[in-house]
Amino acid sequence: MMVSQPVAGVKFDRLSIQATGVRIVPYETGVRRGFGYGFGCRAYWDVGMGWRIGLLNQHWYAPLEQQNAIIQWGWDYWLKIYGNAVYEARQDPVYRMELKPRQALQVKPVLLMIDKRVARFGGLALFTGAGVGAAWYSRQLWLEEKWEKDFPSIGYTYAYSFRNHADPRRGWIGVSRLALRLQWDKNDRFAIGFSAGYESFNRNRKDAARFPLSKIIDGNIELQLRY
Image 1 (cartoon, rainbow, N blue to C red):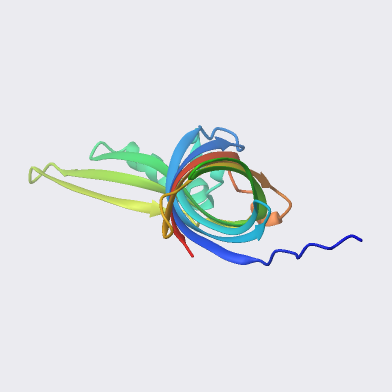
Image 2: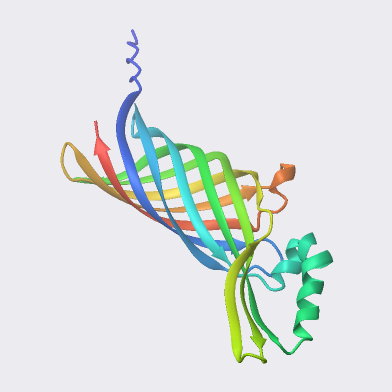
């Protein structure tokens, strides 16, 4: 006679906080590869047999470099009004100016993860994982402007600087993730983890059209609180 085995219950296992470094891979024309940084938190539930489910939330920031950034953005204020004013000022010898376009991207993904322990070496454990979710993003463009105007009659130059911001681009984009993590259970209360992840972005929403990346690769250092 076969005896059924009890199904292991789902148990809250640990909570982690992490520091994150990000390597960005561009999708949009002219955007260069670069790096970002951020932080995150994650909750783990043990479901038995080496399997765990988790909820991952990250916040990261990356400066962007893009050729012809203002043209690529399609900034109407610059193209129709302000660019003409700058052109006219350049023709006047009393004005000198330096205008540098800058961009930045903030991303806040939330993912449901499934992990499997594939190896154990004493207090060390190796996990592989996969997950899906969505990310809210905000992309900003601005000009860092430095102006000088000469007043020859009094021998004075007036200098000023400011940031001129375009309207931000915001929206949601789908995310899928593959991950590898090495975990060291230091004692019954604390553990340390090192992980690497590969995330790709799904452009199935209209507001994802101005998201500039195709994927990222990240590295994380985790401090885990065990329960």
